[in-house]
Length: 111
Length: 119
Image (cartoon, rainbow over all chains, first blue to last red; front, side, top):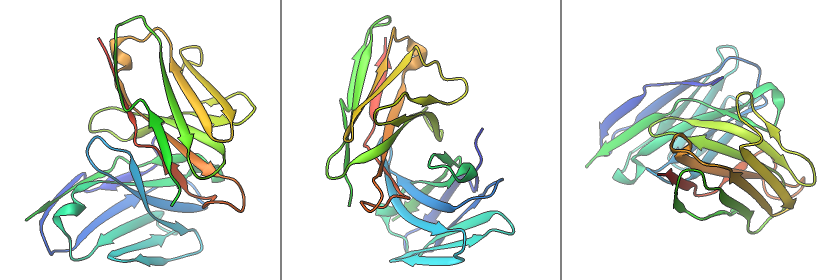
């Protein structure tokens, strides 16, 4: 069964604004990853955060991880129209290599 | 970064036929590959784990005789949808994990996906 739950399911903002997406999971993890998927395309790996890390940055992306609450957030700053996509969090359930994906957030950046 | 390719990118077939989808890691060796299925506006659902040189491990509810997986080398895994039916129409995505010491062993690199339409 799906482990990750994401909210919101859909988010529409103006270009230049910040976008925040949240992900919750149920079991212990080694790491959590965020992926982007453009419509009808494969997944692009954005960032991996390990269970012993609390925050990680990559360009305009900022990811936080709170293992006590079993939750993570992805912040995209200064959004651009090209950021329009679906964003998924994924966890390595039970420490295995296989990933369990959240339901995803569909982000729309309006020009 | 690591590149994973899939072929074909799109396939349309008649009900009852079999379709083979290839997943290749182009610039790294992958001991493990995964196959996912994604229905429209839904998330990815793991179908099976493919390990080079051994039998695939299927997730609960996935028919191993219908979805045949062969991981013949460290750079190639194939998924064959046998006797395809319209309900098998979906977006199939593979991913690959690199060898220890190679490309990001904790990171799965995804192929671009194959859209299967069964008429």
